[in-house]
Structures are given as C-alpha cells and as structure tokens.
Image (cartoon, rainbow, N blue to C red; front, side):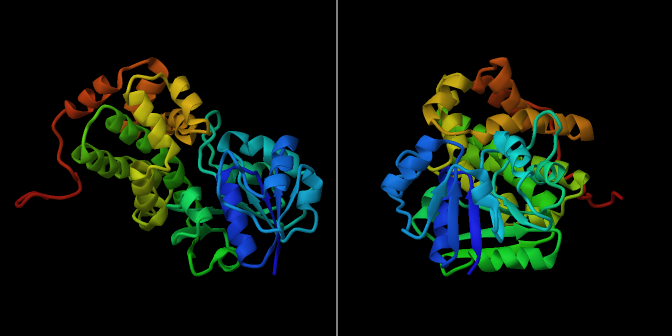
Length: 339
C-alpha cells in the first residue's frame, strides 16, 4: 500500500484518486481552493466537475501543499496545463530528492514550447518525473468503465511502479520510455479535436471527421518524429487512440468547444459555456510555434489557430483545407519505375 497525493481536484484528478483508493492506497486530494476542499469533505464528490462519482471515506482532503506532499511515495500532478509551472514551482519547496511526480495533464507551454514534464523537471530538478496518459475520459474512469493508459518514465522501474499502483481489472496500464511522444500525442490531439468539433458544429458528417482524424495524426506524427518521438507511440494509445476518443466522445471538452465555435460562437463564448479548461485552446498557439520552429507543415492546426485567434469563420477554414494544392498521400511511397 502506497501513500499518494493527487495535486489538483479537477475531474481527472478526482477520477484517478478513486482508482488509487480502489486499489487500497492511502490517498489525499489537494486543491488550492478552500471552498473546493470543503465541498469535497461535505459531499465526498465533486458536485460540479464529476457529479455522481462518490469518493470513499478513506480519502482525505487538504488545501495545505506541505501536508499533501510530506511523506508521500508518489504525487499525481493533475492541475490544468496552464497552472503546471506555477504549481510545480510551489511544490519545489517541499519536494524531496527522488520523489516520484506523475504528470497527468496534457499541454505545451506557449511561451517556451516545453512539454509539461520538461516544465516540472525545470522547476523540481530533484524529482523523478513521469507521465500517465491515454484515451481516458474522467467521466468513464470515475464510473469504473474499462480504460487503458500508458505510464512513461525515464526508467523501467519507475514506469512499472506507476503501473503497479494504478492497474486493476478495469484500469489497464502499459509502460513506455517515450515520454516525449506520449506528451506530444496527448497535447496536440486536443487541437485536432477542436477542428473535429467545429466540423460537427457546421453539420458535416463522419467522412469529414475521419479525414480530420487521419490527417490530424499525420500532422502530429510529422512534428513529433522530427522532435525525437517514436512512431510506435504515435500509432498507439497515446497517439491515435487518444486522438480518436477526443475527436468522437461526448465527454470531450475540446470537441464540445469546437462544436460551439462551428455553430458561430467565439472562442471565449465557447470556453465560458463549456465551463471547464479547454486545453486545446492553450495548446494551439504552442503547436503553431513548434511547427514554425521545426519547419513542419501543419495545415489543420494552422487553420484552427486562425479560427480561434484571428476570427476566421470555421466554414472558411474547412474550405481552405479542402482546396489546398493537390498532393500524394504518402510522399515516401514510390511509383513503379521511380526510385
């Protein structure tokens, strides 16, 4: 039995806390918001972010970061990506050498173009930082529906430690050394999901969504491979798997925001209506920055950026994608008599 704290009381943090508690670990949930902690203590559920998912009496709650971190075998960092750096900075005062910190958020920092693991390692260099990601909506994990994720770490032993703490009959965990691929797949798919949602909002069909998913993973893969990620990761759970679920699921906040934008709402109006952090909005600018840095063409992500931040109508963005210059699907494939 391990002593674990979940840093962040959003829907994903709550769902993972339930998984860990089900596995008989001692679990503490931390939030910077005193009102949120009091609500969790009173109702033993997050009545706004994950209603209906009850937390066991064995889970404790605190707004004191020192209390949440001291003596813990593992910390699950589950704050939204835009708060990862500030939270990690605050955590650095109480972290101990070799303490395992598992990032479960998905995003890229706009200003630095760094992944969240890179940010945490920069702020807490003494920690053993890892990542847990995959096609895993909190609403389904909280209900105990079968789900698979991937634990990525620098060493096999750390990845297997995380695997052992989380894994049970409904939450299967694989391991991988490719943390970069896991993080890029998890963050960039949110941008493609915004595009898929816009297509839904415009009333387009399954053909359009299939095209966005397929060409979307091509864009993600093109960039990720140049940055040093592995093809196997992008074709697996944290690549195409996460992309499919985020583009298609009713639980996807990125898709929901995209639907509202496709129906004519502004980016801010869509975010306000979703009432949760829409990670894809924050990752879009970073994705465009990475594309420019590595000189990789990413037309879908560029069009999403135009819609979000330059008031381009979503319908015009789709039309521009359809009318791009003629291309072959895979430039690496050779015709008979060529090469």
